[in-house]
Amino acid sequence: MNWQQVFPLEGVVQHYDWGGYDYIPQLLGLENKEQQPYAELWMGTHPRGASVVRKNGQPVSLSQLLSGHPEWLGEKVLGQFGARLPYLFKVLDVRQMLSIQAHPNKKQAEAGFQQENEAGIPLDAPRRNFKDDNHKPEVMVAITEFWLLHGFRRESEVARVLEEVPEFEPLQQFFTHRNIYELYKAIMEMPQAEVDQLLHPMDKRLRLLAETNRLKKEQPEYWAARAFVQNALPGGRYDRGIFSIFLLNLMRVMPGQGAYQGAGIPHAYLEGVNVELMANSDNVFRGGLTTKHVDVPVLLEHLDFRPVEPRILKGEPISRAEWAYYTPAPDFQLNRIALSAGEFYQARVSEGPEILFVLEGAVTPVGCDTFTRGQAFFVPAGHPFALHGEEDTVIYKALAP
Image (cartoon, rainbow, N blue to C red; front, side):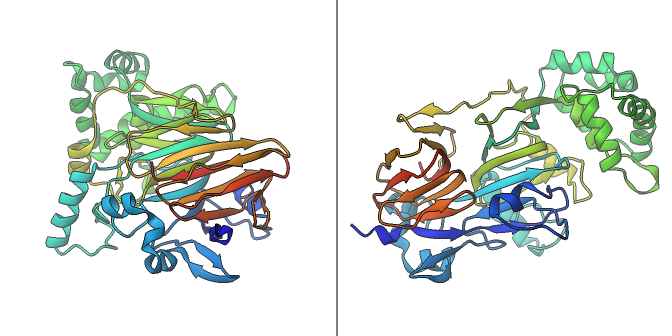
């Protein structure tokens, strides 16, 4: 048994403006004297941030390592996804709200990617919608209390919002048939002057409530008030994504709990720290709370307008120490491992590649060096390994199901 096939892995930090200043630097044992935003830590083979592994002490990109050893992906992954890691593993620290967005299914991604290629739209063009031919389902598990928007609310709740929010009274004419698509289409196609006319009085009203601390995070108004400040547009204009804060389900996910974003489900991360696992794709349709390209016709074509009943994933135990957050996605599975000091964990032999990230504590793979908080390692397909908890330890594991 070659225990040296457990490879130390170094992730790549993304410094997006919405990121926090403390959590990821502290996780990685770094100083952040310049107060750069540390938004995401990526672990995988994505071209914009491929991880580096240590092989015999020498750094080599995970992409290069797998291209030289495709058998490490396993027969099933090779057969279904080709010679590439099918997932991207992340840690996110959301200080400011992210854009409202959704992702295509696999068939839509393939068709859209081909169509934009044939139209000659460069891959890096701001108006490009399909950066690749893959879908992008996502699962997240909260590390801190985490807030997000997820899917459209029930028609009865949308009707109540239009009645109770004074500035939304003019929108009731677009919801006479209780059709969320008709309402959302009207909002997204509304002339900017009308958007400003509706949202300006709300801005004034919510700023006053926010200044006197009369808004709570359980209220859409709290996040709308933040969006008025964070997403102010030039010339006193307003971002129409603020309407969606009231139309989508507001979720609070506690540490250890998760949520799954399937194809077409509009969502937005609002605040908190999580681990996230997704298909290896860049395909995003944006619906507001952003200065980036919003393609309304493409958005309307690909969104799922059916109401969603938010479902919190609690993880299903598969052993005394391990829980799985099951989703319908064939590309990935996210597991959590919790070990007490001195406890051994014998991993099941996986048919696909695995990345393990130590969130808390310290653990030693048998025959290897110890990995501590903020460190990760890569395990090839078909390779057995065992772990020893040096102290109370929490690990998140990405695998192909």
